[in-house]
Every structure is written in structure tokens, then in C-alpha cells.
Length: 418
Image 1 (cartoon, rainbow, N blue to C red):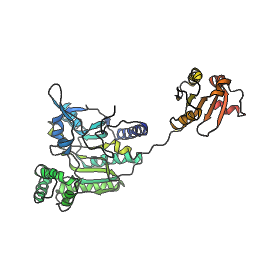
Image 2 (cartoon, helix red, strand yellow; image 1 turned 120 degrees about the vertical axis):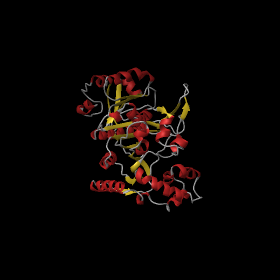
Image 3 (cartoon, one colour; image 1 turned 90 degrees about the vertical axis):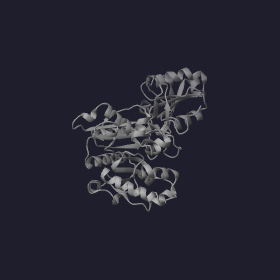
Image 4 (cartoon, rainbow, N blue to C red; image 1 turned 90 degrees about the horizontal axis):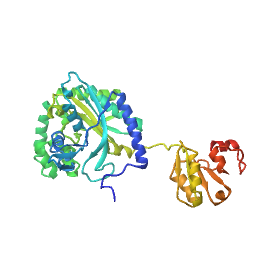
């Protein structure tokens, strides 16, 4: 049996990197006043159709959707924000006057994509959402929080920002962009479809011929209204004052239809590690009151590819023997070190093989070995896997930690450490 395509196990060093990421990111967002929330992996398909947008690749191509035994159309969640907003509205938090609601989440997401570097069909996402604050200062704090996470993880990133405008200026720009795209016959099939319903999606197209067309398109930054321009200028000023480097990318629209005004991405070597922005209309579109919101999502697996973890110092004991008759003794030796890190090889292997396993397959500090000579004389050999030093002493001395003498001239104090 094998795992499904694009749904890898999390193990080994990647598991250690994941633990490091979660500890670091969770601690930072909690310091900013965010509390943990968890939403279901399965939601009604309509939720994502209404939030991500019918023209998005997520809804059009990538969702795992099916009809369950009750006849309901449900989907594995492709992203985290929609479920958070659904919960916000369902629990009537939008009705609490003056509420400032800040939450963070993590968990698996699912998209039917072609697996490649940093992109899987089951992937983990860490995100945070802030409700109830319409000021650009909250956008700045969200971006600052993300920068803090990457700084703490020692991952150098490039921040790209854009303003998508508001309802006042965005509608006019869409019309202008649509008119431009309708004159272009060389667009890909997806962009031909998008230009009628949501032409902004064409700005994010990865097809080379569409990229060339977009170079001549009207720029969003030249079409935003005075209010949006002031907010975007304030955001740039705040980032500059905070010494957070950024680039303005007029084609940055993100992959979801619900964003307005601020949009941003953090990239490393051209790969988007995190992104987000403001979505002031999403709460009302799901039946709640008009509540402003801003948030972000991090693709955890993408971050893990750039994480480095320090090797932990060796600790504990590896026990092994080449003699089947010594297995019982081996477990008695291990039992004497109860409460410490223990690694036991219960198969009889050659002495050289045992030392290789202890050194390369475990993080043990000492290898405790019983070979033929040791078995016949009721002795054990202990090897310090850091220094390479070897010591030999009796089974009784090891179990009782009574090192009265040595058989190879080493000091009593040295054995007491073992």
C-alpha cells in the first residue's frame, strides 16, 4: 500500500521542522492577542463557491467535492478563511457592537493540483484573521506579525503588496480591464472565460502568452480612488518606518475573489510562502452584518523547505547484542536506565552493524553492546558516540551504577557519567 498522490507523510526532519514552525508561529500570534480556533475539515460546497468565487481555480478545478450519504453537496476545505467567517456569522459575533475578534488556526487543506515543490494535494495551512477593524493600521499589524514569524524562523522573504481598490474604484477598473482584454485573441481559455465575469483573475495568470498581454493592460494603481490611494500610501509609509522592505506589484490580486484594498504575499526564491489581505465584504456576503476583516494564510510545507533545524545533542542509550543468549540481559540493562532516552535493537546483529545503527539511526549518546567476548565474561562495552571512546565493565556495575574499578584503565569518574 502507498499514500495517495500528493498526500505525503510528515515524518523525520520534516516532522521536527513542523513542530518548530508551530511552536514559533503560535507563540508570536498569541503575543499579538490572537486566540486559537478550529473549524471542520468538511463544509458545504456552497460556502466555497460563494467565498472563493466561481471563477477562481480553487472552485473551478481544485476542490474535492462529493455528495454524501444524505445527499448533501460537501467539500474538503481548500483554504481556511471561509470556514472562519462562516463560524463568525453562525455564532452571531457580527451582532456584538464594537467587537474586535482575532483568531488563528492551523490544519490540513485539500486541493486537486499537480504535485510539485511546495505544492501538495493535502497540505497544511496556518492562518490568522482579524475582524472589526477597518483601519489600514490593522493591515500593517497583520503584515508585521507575519514578518516576525519569518524573522524568528530565520527565513529571508520578499514582501509584495498591492491595493485592489474598493467598490467605488474597483468597478470602473474592472470595466476598463475587461474592455482591454476583449480586444486580445491570444489569451488562454481560462482568461477568455474570466474576462467576462472577473477580469482581475487574468492579472494572476501564469500562462506566458497571457503574461505578455497583461504587460500592456491598464494598471490598477493608476485607477484607485483618492481614499484607497491614501490608505495604500499610509501602509507603505508604516512599512518603511518599521524597516520592513517591500515591493509594489500591480498584478498581485491573490487567488481568491473576496479580497479588496490591501493584498500581499511573502515570497522566497519566487515561491509564495504566505499571503493575504483585506476582505471587508465577506461577512455580509455570508449573511452577516457588514464587518471589516483582514487576515493571512501560510503554506506550512512551503516554509518547511527553507527551514533549518539545529541538531539536538546526543542523549540516552542504545542497547544491542550479537548474541541471542544475551537478549534478556540487554533488556535488564535498558530497564536500569528507566526514565532516560532508550533505543533497543532486539535483533542479533554484527558488532560493526550495531555501532553503525547507534550512530546513524538514533540520537543516543552511548552505545551499550554485548558481543561474544562480553557475554562470556558477563561484561558490556560502552562507546561514547560523540568522542568515540570505548569502555568495558561488568553488567552488575552498569545496572547498579557502582563503578568501583575499570577493566581498561579508565577513570572511575568517567564511568559514573555513563
